[in-house]
Image (cartoon, rainbow, N blue to C red; front, side):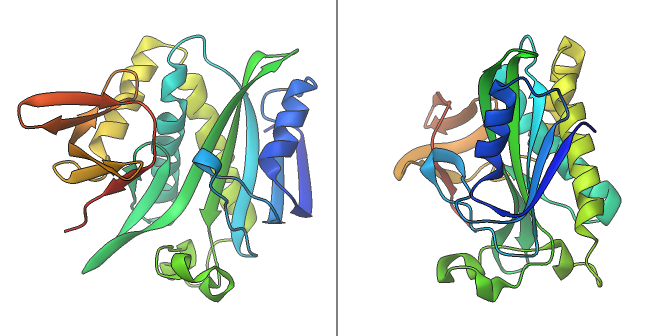
Length: 245
């Protein structure tokens, strides 16, 4: 691990880490907060950040190639760390969420990832990985739409793990996952992990609210392949919704 800033509350760990990366922060620099007042998700979504979650942003050197795989690779690495250390098995929802199956219902979100790439005087290009993990949330502190859509590690462990232990696992997994993309063998291994845990294969997908097709898998550049009849299409960005059984 590198230098670490911790806050009781901050508008956004991601915005602070981007500022540090542009100012020349070294790889492994991490910004952690117990709450955020303006947490960010993908596509201008907000990230509600009440007490009981891990909210951090990590700076890493951008890989020379395979940069389009960073979000997926971090997600798969994070899933492996959480499963191995805490015994909670999740699936990877393209391109950046970890979902835990719920018997008889839709899966619930355990973790989300946001990747920003910025110029860095020390690293050339820096990946800023914003990661949120629900550890011991009181769901009553979330807005009504999210209360039934989230899950915490504490739902599976009594007592829930300390935030510091989860942070250690997350930072180690994220750094290793990004560094792995510097080699072709590492990128192929990351892709294999992503494909093995991809959520929604064989189900209908909507992207940005538009019916898109049946989810088939992940391509070499991290794109999501969907099919319509005999035709297959690549989705490279957008807000994905998967039809639930």
